Image 1: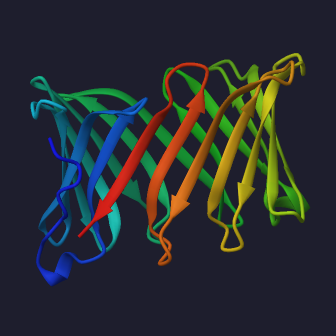
Image 2: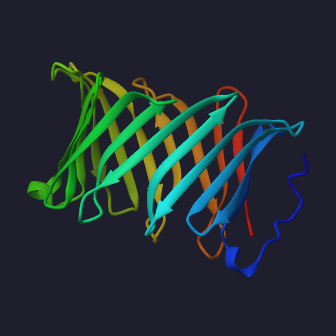
Length: 233
């Protein structure tokens, strides 16, 4: 595997993602090769550093909306199917192994914004917004199937281009927080996760080309650092 080989394709694919090279420490461990067999299909091949394919995924789009993702890993086929309403809002996400439905997510909206995800057999996620539902996200609440709160995250926004996400358990004790730094265009530049004691758990930094495309994601942590480098046609 040579992560430095440039991507070449027809002009129709210029600017689209070609390859993601994954590294642990300073060593590449594999890559994801991206191709576009048709105008509405995206295929991804996951390879080890030796070149062996461990997984493939196929994404199908219609009118710009993702319809399905099919994954084949060592002969086990999993599929995710997306369904939309007449306003193109995502309403259901169904997960299958073979022909068996494993779980489904039902999504509800209010004022054109997502307010509830109900996950079969697992529970739900509720979205609460500032300004009576018209402002930015205020709180994300995770509940079990009985409706009991498991944990929640509360969002704070600062004029410095930073956002703080406070993670709390059901009894309101702290589970740490994440500090996110946003660029002037709203893209995430850095995210830092802190423990409840204030210790840094990990730092992820995002690097972009001048045209706004993501070219590198680096996560520094207690163990070996991990990185993804993105190449484009």
